[in-house]
Amino acid sequence: MEFERHRRLRKSPFMRDIVRETHLHKDDLIYPIFVVEKDDVKKEVPSMKGVYQISLNMLKEELDEVVSLGIKSVIFFGVPNEKDPEGSGAYHDHGIVQEACRLSKELYPELLVILDTCLCEYTDHGHCGLIDEKTEDVDNDATLPLLVKTAVSQARAGADIIAPSNMMDGFVTEIRKGLDDNGFSHIPIMSYGIKYASKFYGPFRDAAESTPSFGDRRTYQMDPANRLEALRELASDENEGADMMIVKPALSYLDIIRDVRNRSDLPVVAYNVSGEYAMTRTAIDMGLLDEEVIIEQMLSMKRAGADLIITYFAKDICIKINQGEV
Image (cartoon, rainbow, N blue to C red; front, side):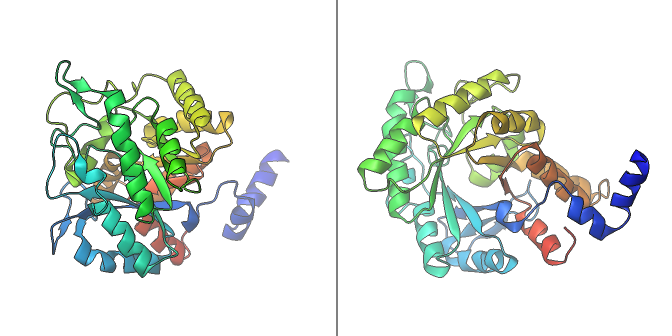
């Protein structure tokens, strides 16, 4: 009887759909866009087929496509013309992501804009904060005021959500206070509070031109071997005022997504990172995997407990949804 019931429920696509436990929708997706200060650039990232660095004067074409496909949310990453030790381009009121946000809001006010709040794309050394010359390590406390300045400048530019990715201790507290003190208490913080020191970030660093010039980020990002540390980071960021929690990367950390979902009622965001995208895209292009694997991966993140997914596959997924294939 039990097996017959299972067969009945799987017999037709319609029946499978109505009893399906996990669903993937356009509203679940956040699409990353890399914006460069140079004019007339639409350059494919060599390690990420289908992903581009795009100039502000060519951004409209990209946003037109994003909106026409039904993508509701984007996150901007900036590539400035000039970098310095303090990452001053990050908190300049006319910085590259601030200008991208303004243009997006002018063209498509209904498109939700998230801005990445970090210094690594703007520092000439590629680290996420100021460097202590004596230790040659990131100076956590000296970095916090600059992150606050960055968040406030992004809110002034019209960002709907601030997404701090720096992993400095106490960053949520300081950014929350800075936003509140400057009249932006309504702006939520999507914290990259659970961000592992992963080897899956390589293609992103090509796209954002943010590879560290020395050392690595293990002193302020999490050890991939640690599970309980993620729960401590979750508790800390919740207490500090985070409104959403990102787990990054996603595919190798589905257990962490589930742990966070079980422990918190905050919206959980899975970041399907560049290395995950690149290896899947390459395997599809080589004929080793069917394109359906993209949907399978996204469903695994939703099944694990993610409410939202930041993914470079957002366009591909929306095309499949529009064609009735999801």
